[in-house]
Length: 101
Image 1: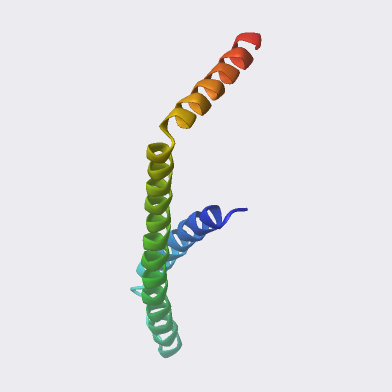
Image 2: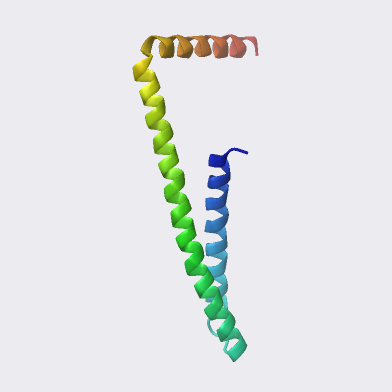
């Protein structure tokens, strides 16, 4: 698994955990008790920390995507004819494979 895929999966998992924790807090809002209040307080703190981590990782993933797009753009601008040839070759290969199928 690549770093980018792992980061996307981490963002997705964090989003799911945050959503589940918020649902849990809403579901137990009408219940009282010292122990439950303590747990709810700890969960709220953990939830805020998870949201901060989620935002940080999401910004990193978006930054990596932008960097990859800029690098690709730079390569295409530096080597336009090679890029056109590569795109043509790949298109031809895909066309032949699709026609055989």
